[in-house]
Amino acid sequence: MECKDYNQKFEEINGWEKTSDGREAYSKLFKFADFKQAFSFMTSIAMKAEQINHHPEWENVYNKVTITLTTHDKGGITELDYDMALFSENCFKNYI
Image (cartoon, rainbow, N blue to C red):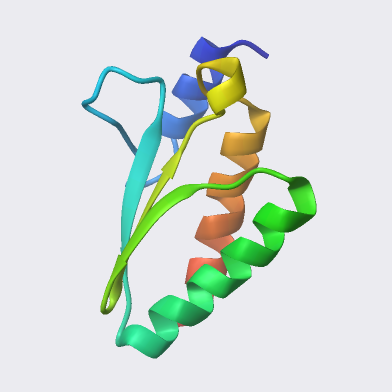
């Protein structure tokens, strides 16, 4: 599947937005009840990232986690990014 196809797939996942920095990347802000939940979520994502050797860009401020996905060595969105977005969405369901 080509990058443009994954761009379309990302548009179908609630809350993921194309970054405004000119890169082929998508990001989403996840909000939690507290820092402990946010950090637990990040730990789940980190374990998956290690498993598939695909690591997100992210930022954590107290109860908020922003994840940005792109495949740097491919210069755009790939199946790994899409899979990581879906995994993130499934993990987040545990906190709402």
